[in-house]
Length: 155
Image 1 (cartoon, one colour):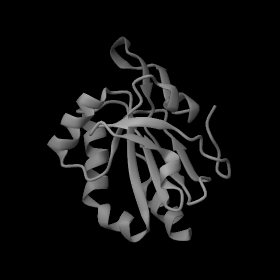
Image 2 (cartoon, rainbow, N blue to C red):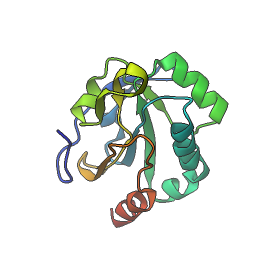
Image 3 (spheres, rainbow, N blue to C red):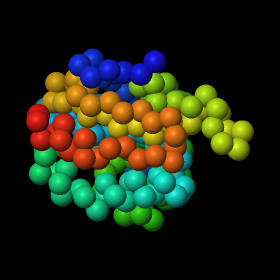
Image 4 (tube, rainbow, N blue to C red):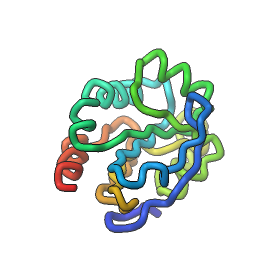
């Protein structure tokens, strides 16, 4: 079950890599790009988040914040964030509840792993409404960042 454009984004409360509690509702009044990614330190995930890092000015100009979410522990995410110099919060969905509520969840992944976030991009507007939703079946694919920016430009 994936979420659709026009639906209210499910609120969530997760811990960030710097051990702070982050609620989606804290971002009311701002546009948010929520990126679910399978696993820290993997090639495609690193490329995706570094692309966002390198283009952070574009997202700032579009009055949007970025949140990255994976099922990795907050300790793993802290090391990943520091190594890649990522300027946005990485949130640990270790209990897998948020990934499931967004329909961004692999029951079965590679190497016999179960319960990993699907690579996904959601744009959530100032009122908490989903304006863009892309859940990818293949972990090797990247979200359509141009479509994400186009959506933000229209808000």
